[in-house]
Image 1 (cartoon, rainbow, N blue to C red):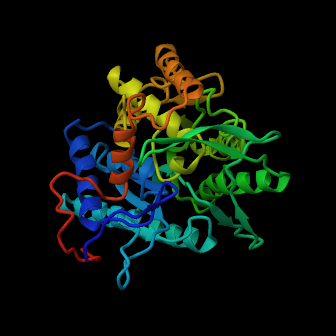
Image 2 (image 1 turned 30 degrees about the horizontal axis):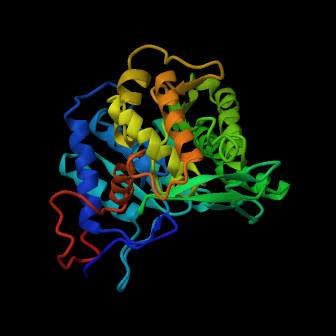
Length: 394
């Protein structure tokens, strides 16, 4: 089957098996070239199939030499339909890790469910005994409550007032206005239920109760703050409320695991184009401008570069990591530099005040587009996208 990208509303619904394997291998090669660092040797990653979660798993294995267990909810190929990008990514990672003798296990299913938690617990007991590192990197549109069975759906909306701003279609560079109506109280609560910290706490609690975490255990979850331009739709919106809940859960987890000298930390990461961020109003426009500025200043990082810096320069240096006033690691430190934000602000004002059809010259639309497509296995060097390819290459 010849597979091409099919994209609607900044969502790609196809993935290329050889391309996904190539981009996973490219990330692995980058990390192998950066050398090793001492750190945890038994790691579980919840949300291991894309973006920061996949990058964390790659760094855990190829920098730390850690055995990894990755949990993700992805779909295998069937008939004439390719698998999801995440399915190809996790299978590609497994192949590459096993080639070099690293222990690796994939668990495919709903990480919110008790069934998957139980499956992972039993697998840890059988294969690892205990774990010393838990990475939580879930980005999901909905969640089924494991106790009540109620289905919660997240909503990307402002709170209090409607939000209107310019945004960009990164496939064409076309600029348009977008308006998001304010969230209802129900939508706020449901977004917190899906994207907040409750499930991170439940995962840690389950491992703690089963005596599956080692002394000195570390767990980390990823958050984002963002600039003033997107504050109304992001940090002051429903997603922001969920991120606040996630961050507050670090304190609860720290109290829970204090007896084993455990630690829970939030890492505030850089804005990147991912399958999740691509559909947030105005955010693709901000990212396009940010990429241009950060690349010109030689500060740009993708997911794998961020995770390498997090592991090598912050988490596993032998010293306590530097935290902000709210107890968070700030991996967005280069993004929020005054000179970077000022340059982005200058470009944003042009976009806001000019009647522009597209922003190819103002923003790094090309780079944003390429990175988005690579998340789905397209545009990778050395891959012939005109060749017939098996949907299941593993």
